[in-house]
Amino acid sequence: MESKVREYVEELGKTRMYGIGIPYISSVTGTWIQEEDVRDAEYWGRQLRDTVQFEQGVKELLGEKENVVLEVGTGEVPRLDGVKVVQSLGSKGQSGLEGLMKALGKLWVAGIEVDWTAFYQDEKRHRVAIPTYAFDKKRYWIDPAPPTETKTPIVHYRTEQINNRPQLRNPYAAPANQVEKQVVDILESVLGIHPIGVTDKFGELGGDSLQGVTFASEMREKLGIHVDAIDLYESTTIREMVRKGIRCYDEEGTSPEFTTGDDRRVRAREASVRKSSDETMEEY
Image 1: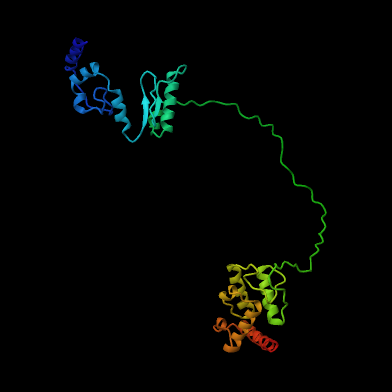
Image 2 (image 1 turned 60 degrees about the vertical axis):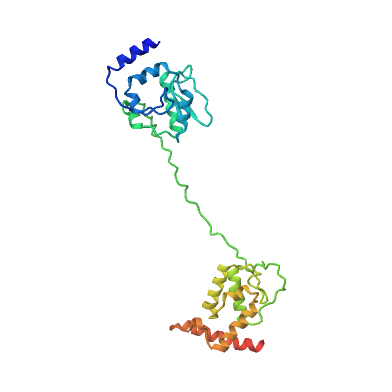
């Protein structure tokens, strides 16, 4: 064997050597092939005679980031822990093309980028004639139903009010005057609860922040009374809110929320509430 290797090296030395095209693991060194080895005839002599450093080469290969191995040998796929090994020659009973296509698919699934333009460049497509659909020209449109005489339904409206007042610790107390009645009506409309008593509290009735803003806005718009948001959540009853609002009118003469502009309707409301408040204070 040594004599044959020598003859091979001498003949190879007469040949022009080219550089590395695709990097690969050398079976002589067990590491990546070097440019000087590729151009050295003695290296190729050792490649014929020396022991193949397969284990060392695999370890070197698996040290890279992408652990996907393509087997291009006899079809015997080695088992490597944590490494995806793809067989390129296919299994028994498969054609070479079928095995190659399956290998390509497995490589793509494993995350390897495929040059699909190069893959399809020699593909030739043919137009295939298929039979047309036989239209029977039958009408299947759904016509509207003929008009029928309709009678206007009689709708019976419930005139009684619902009673969905929650179970509270305090008993129901009806409004004692017109101002309390107006405030209760506004709150019942906002919360959707009936009846609401003047000793009930906004928070215990289940009112939330959005309903609180709506209630305060309705009080300003309809009665000209300013309600502080803190009063709604500090266990203040409806009656206490009315008394506080009336007291503000008595001390200040007008609501600070409605002192600007020329809104005659607001001033009329303030006068109406002030008149009602005088009557209410006499009752209190």
